[in-house]
Amino acid sequence: MSETLAAPPELHADARWQRIDFISDLHLSADTPRTYEAWASYMQDTPADAVFILGDLFEVWVGDDSRFEGFEAECARVLRDASATRSLAFLVGNRDFLVGAKLLQDCGMTPLADPTLLTAFSQRVLLTHGDALCLADTEYQKFRAMVRSPAWQQQFLAQPLAARRDYARQVRQQSEAKKRLQTSPDEWADVDGPEALRWLHAASSTTMVHGHTHRPASLPLGDGCDRHVLSDWELDHAPHRAEVLRLTGQGFQRLPLAQALAR
Image 1 (cartoon, one colour):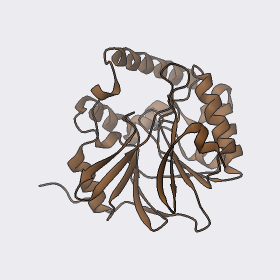
Image 2 (tube, rainbow, N blue to C red):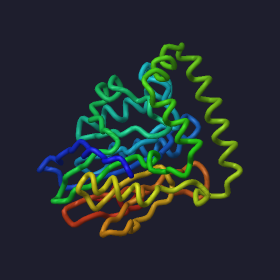
Image 3 (cartoon, rainbow, N blue to C red):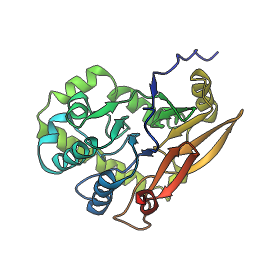
């Protein structure tokens, strides 16, 4: 018999918000300058009142002390500038799970638990990165359990920054090698439907928004529930893709990046 799930923490949208944007899986790094520039422009110019980043903003994040130099410092500056004019919320993913309170506080971002229930425009929307629901990927789930443990994180963050960057490079190389053996994201494990429904029922919600799978679509889960899967962003290598999921009083819209920036 499945364990009963606790209701997730709840976040109420500001009554003044008219547009809420959801993005994820940008995998920003110094090796993706076009994607970074597109994201920086979006963060500056989006007409949204709030932007919810649902994980894997960064290809890798090795600790908040990395925010003071190089590419990470540029990303922190973009986030800091954006938070001066709109609300930002951040939910960690499988690549940037070490984003911590110092970066979030410095950049004016609200931390989100995974999952979090957002109430906005008379809707109850369950937000998650999505990786915890990919139950068929048993190898990853074991890895996730290890690196999310406080003991592992404390030990890892105690290492010098240079050593952590070296480890991250090794993990990225292994990940890229694995992806080259797969022809498309369709070969990756997808969200487990029954478990997703269990999460929604625990939250008294019928709508889930998640990323992680790189399969952007709006899909039924059954039992009157559905999920909106966020687009990954890739503007440095063909085929290019970058979408924003926007929620307004009229419902959800899936917008190409240029259209999302139109006022």
